[in-house]
Image 1: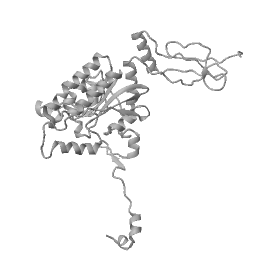
Image 2 (image 1 turned 60 degrees about the vertical axis):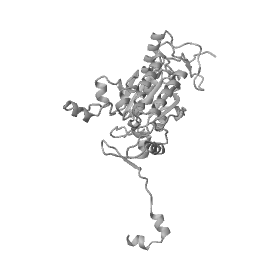
Image 3 (image 1 turned 120 degrees about the horizontal axis):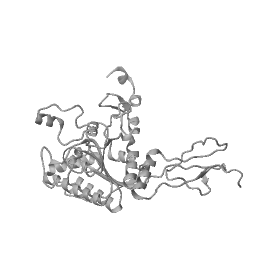
Image 4 (image 1 turned 45 degrees about the vertical axis):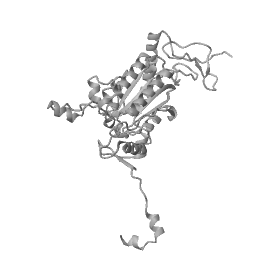
Length: 360
């Protein structure tokens, strides 16, 4: 106590007291940089200075990923919550209640359907905040249900993994989810539907030993720890010092364990491009206004980006069908883009427009 608090009336004392939120500033674990929470949230929880990828909640991830931040959660089946009546220092059923209250999720998997740059997709996200994202009966059923939804609606299936492995409190029931999810992956493969795995920090244990390493394409977030056993356990077992960066995403990319390392801020565009390639349905490019040399009037040229054009050409070679739309843009009337005179663009995706001269 001091003379200010002693002498001021209670109403003024309460006015001077200001409550500051606990999460107003966030410290980067890698660089020690302090980042304003709203700036971190706007950058998808990637620290602007160091590029460190912090944990992001499943629904926040989905809002940043899907069109207009909209998605529909899938109805997941109910399973026995505590089949073994497990108890250590507290009941397993009590632990589940705590995690459900903390995360707002029934278990460690959130499964949704939505649009990714107009393409229908089915997505499952593991929540590391729910008991370390461990794989139990409920999580296994959720993944299988999401894959069955992808099969029924003929959509690509994308899963974001983040897990410490199988859930020990469920014993063999947890371990059985590994072959069950593997069978579901085989069904996706038989139906020729894309299965893309995004490995986030950390992905370890039985999850790595099953569906996390069975994708058609494996993407990792920068700095993610990916492996089965921990590095310390491996060093103690083989009695050797492991290489620098062992089990990190960049190390695994260099040694062929993952296909690409993609920052979170570029994940949406990358996944959309991959889905369009794997489903052989390239996304239509938006016209881009560019000046045409040697013309005295205003013209527009709609071009397809090189990566999109390459994807379209690849699809033409594989299927014999050109998905690239033929568009002619005419701006000579001065009222914005209008339909042209019927001339079609070439198959490369480049569309030219000539101003009308002396024609009514």
